[in-house]
Image (cartoon, rainbow, N blue to C red; front, side, top):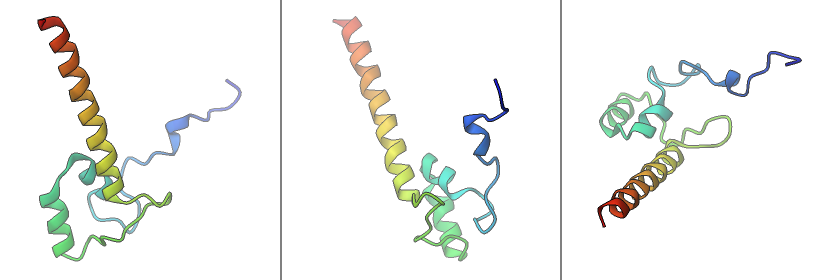
Length: 84
């Protein structure tokens, strides 16, 4: 390998400056609506927040939900196939 560049090296382990104490995108991915609501109520979350790529917490949640749904459907299909 000529350089030390790793594709995931740009990912941050902690929230970026200006974000709530907890990473709002992670909270959205996990569907933690209670914490998100609390952050909003405390004025620590702007519902119009977008990351550097223009992605909102809603986008994150929808994507994650779809992947979870897909995994569940695949699992059901596989289990169903072996039970027939």
